[in-house]
Image 1 (cartoon, helix red, strand yellow):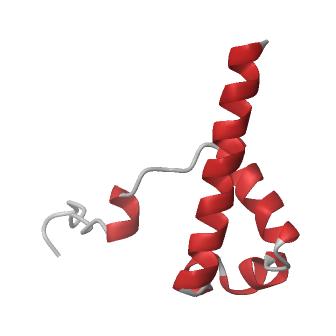
Image 2 (cartoon, rainbow, N blue to C red; image 1 turned 135 degrees about the vertical axis):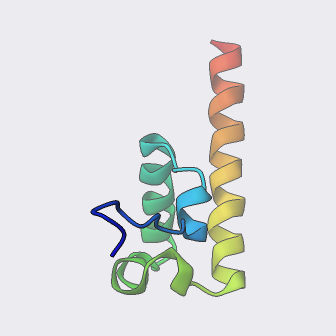
Length: 75
């Protein structure tokens, strides 16, 4: 090759995406379970969900976060 130097590896799009914090990932999995989507997420991953399913998960996730913030604010 080139004198033992490693060839640079092109970064994929995924490597540029931010990692989901563990707490958020746990909440997403809880919501997927509530919606009956947990098996699908485990089989094909989050990318295998339809836009409608992803929107439902995201909407409920934001609602839970907003409710938790309100609860923390009142305590």
